Image (cartoon, rainbow, N blue to C red; front, side, top):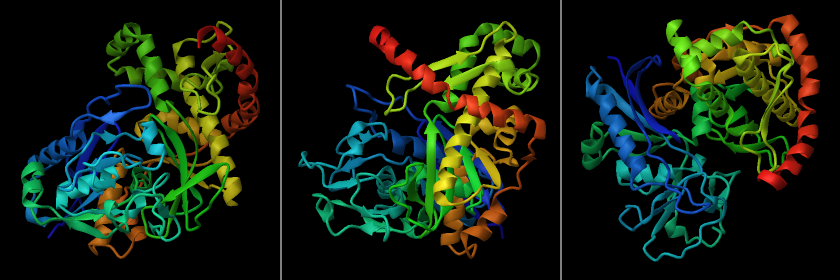
Amino acid sequence: MTRYLVGIDNGSQSTKVSIFDERGTVVSRGRRPLRPNHTPRPGVVEHPDDDLWTSIGAACREAMASFDGDPGDIVAVGLCTIRFCRALLRADGTLAAPVLSWMDERVSRPYEHTDPAVARVTTSSGYITHRLTGEFRDTAANYQGAWPIDTDTWQWRGDTGGVPREMLFDLVMPGEVLGTVTASAAERTGLPAGLPVVATANDKAVEALGSGLREPGSLLLSLGTYIAGMTTGSRNVRDATGFWTNFGCVPGEYLYESGGIRRGMWTVSWLRELFGEEVARAAREAGLSPEEYLDDGASRVPAGSDGLMTVLDWLAPTEKPHRKGAFLGFDGRQGRFHLHRSVLEAIALTMVEHAEAMAAELGTEFSRVIVSGGGAEADVMMRIIADVFGLPASRTANNGAALGAAITAGVGLGLFPNADEAAATMVATPEVFTPNPDDHHLYTRLREIHRDITHHTDQIFHRSTTLFG
């Protein structure tokens, strides 16, 4: 009998639900976009109405509708939701207010009890757990930042920071059963009633597990709207300067996250849209999508983009609010493909600096790079990463968080003895890109120039903000 696992990946832009067999093969999937965030005033970013639960229900129904196996052979669902959200619930578990996005400035501060209608305070995963199971339980591994949690024990602190303990959910570890799908949730999602719902962790940790990140010598480069480098370990490292420590997807493990790039792959999309119809028309004539057309052209531009360099601060870091994005080094040789490649090179050149800063503080060295996210689908991006880092680079399937959720559920239900064996079985063997020695040598020299760019552009943009903001 083939057994199946459901992975729910509720991300920042959409909810994706995948059904996997025991070898990690996707047999069915569903996807629903989230509605645009509600931003009624500066600093407030909310998910409108009951959008998280609505999108999860729709994506589950779509996945179940195309599943041609026996629903009785589905053994568990792993739940992964957006991290750093805050949900305020009434006593019956319904929303007392819209869910606060991770971008809402209020989630960076401890909860203040000002609304008597609020009986519970939890994360997005706690809220969805209640909708699925009726239980007031949540994974400990999705609480960081302003939450009153002991990051050594993964339990609530004795001093809960002014939040009454009865307002907080009971915590369980990743891999533990949160509850079972209720009859009403089964009707809403199409999932079998009585199906165990298994706790996972925060979305980055779940993505790391689903990408096969299991040893400290590997670096996971997540190419999304926000780009970050990640690795794992067993130490709860505090007060690091080159990275920060988050809970991992396995009890007792931690996820270390490097500095990153805000609006990382967004910048690639922005540039493509800026090219507009001219590129779209050329792509159609070549029988390619605009993304494929630009990637193909960039692959034929020499390493270093003939001297064109990009500063990636299209969204300035909070500590340098005056920074802007920039292209430097035009001399008439460059065209659209140079611009595209230069952005990809800037991503790799920026992230290798962040990754090495993290490795130095951890006292480790990376021997390979795993690349996840939509940006990993382009061969030219993979080759640039391999050449800049000087390491073998492998890409994962673009379903890391859903697969990580399913893996955690499989371990929790005893289908696998541990996460290592589960990942070895369910994560596909990736294609590996090896570095070109000549291009790596060039990028090593270019790094010395690239890391100094902002020392010069900071002065210019600081002055220009007085004129243009």
